[in-house]
Amino acid sequence: MSNREYPLYTIKNNCLDCYKCVRRCPVKAIKIEDNSAQIVPELCIACGTCYKVCPVKAKQARNDLTRAKHLLNSGKDVYVSLAPSWITEFEGISSEQMIASLRRLGFKGVGETAVGAEEVSASVAKILEQNSRGLFLSTACPAVVEYINKYMPQMSR
Ligand code: SF4
Image (cartoon, rainbow, N blue to C red; front, side):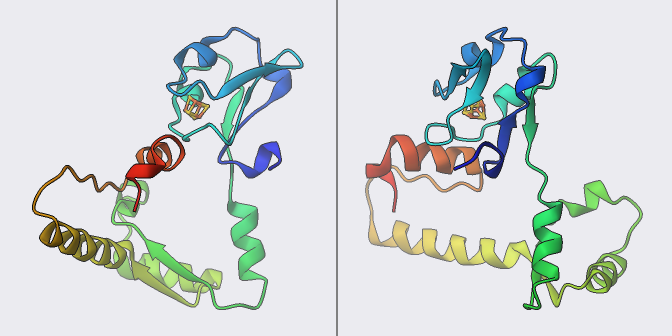
């Protein structure tokens, strides 16, 4: 996986080699290579801590705009799964305006992310019904999901 395929990456020339990110990474997923602190994707859980603590913004989040444009130009039907939190980023815009804008951009349709969340909740309810004892964790946090998948795979379903 190349550096910029992962959600977070290092701008090598900006890195001051200060070790702040190395010290704060909860899973020790940063290595020093060529005098800069590089994220090791296979170990990283994408928690964003290094992004927050870097004093010179050497850690950056991948921008997926180009990927989205590429998808829209591919001729395939592309749909948006719109999380309810969109409203915090686009104050004063109604749902109708947002949907119309996305369709004008070329998206075939817009659905609510909550639809997926309902499916997940139904599956979790089923698991809990079938298991009267035990500790179960269900989360929408991608960092926690990555942590379980990479560091506790025996706990993953
Ligand atoms: Fe470590 Fe989190 Fe940065 Fe990944 S995103 S390298 S887990 S601090």
